Length: 251
Ligand code: SAH
Image (tube, rainbow, N blue to C red):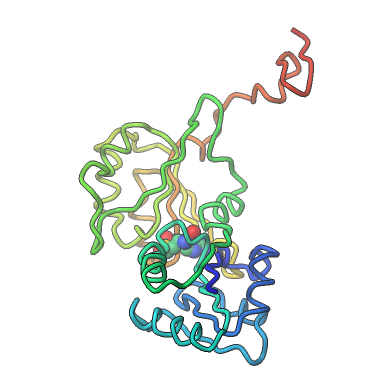
């Protein structure tokens, strides 16, 4: 059995209770050493065999799992944040299906949630944006043309950019070209929920400068949109006049 487990965004106590339990029971753990906090490995049994996938190919990962299965062992594949976001898990699932190896998935706190917590912000504000676009700038990994930053920027929704801090010169130009004004608020969150977390507030117009001046090339998210500003309307849900399934409004 293989359990794909979301490690959370960094702080070791942000893994789910289920994820920690699965780590504690695993015979073999393959963790994404480039981003997973190694302190999470303290949940493992002493006898647990540990592999760092940062130095491995897909084939090597599958080989370790195959070997573990042969010996009747349980494997945890530990991914950073939640494995559904840039986790490269689908290709692993498909290999396991081919091999007839059973697997399941335990969700984790994605870094975009960790970043919102670090910023103490809400991505979906009434009259500002009711949509969160999760995307990345095209770099060595291409992005389909129909998902260009310009086209997504046209919505002026909240945008969270993964894997993009080394591409901000082009990114900034495309965000502006697409429709965000230069004074649209933005933020960069470096290592959200890690002890060395850092937050930088800027605007779309100063995004590239802020990233370069602070050397933020790795493990950072860029958040763009009016949700980082001052304006919003209060919610209907908690409006005294508004009737809900659970509460009678005054009007
Ligand atoms: N599955 C992960 C994302 C993996 S892609 C998740 O759900 O968060 C790797 C990218 O995620 C990094 O380049 C960075 O953009 C972002 N990232 C991961 N952890 C982060 C953190 N703690 N703080 C800020 N960004 C992070």
